[in-house]
Amino acid sequence: MGDNDYRRYCEHLRRQHPGVSPISEREYWKARWAREGASPQGRCC
Image (cartoon, rainbow, N blue to C red; front, side):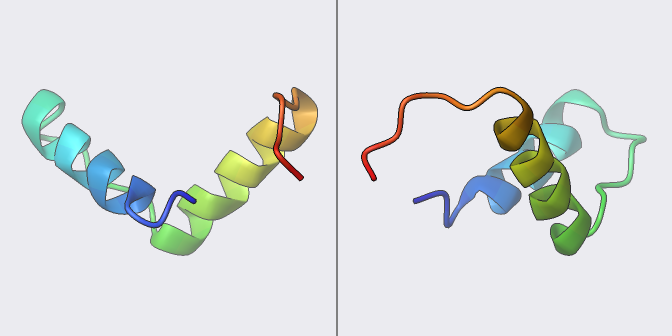
């Protein structure tokens, strides 16, 4: 369900882009939902 997605995003930034600060969790989900709404994938429900 994506519960760990923000944590994984932060870990990715820390490993791959050490000088970049992560966006807030709220902004992360807002951007993700906007991206999914713009190009919906297959969903179970």
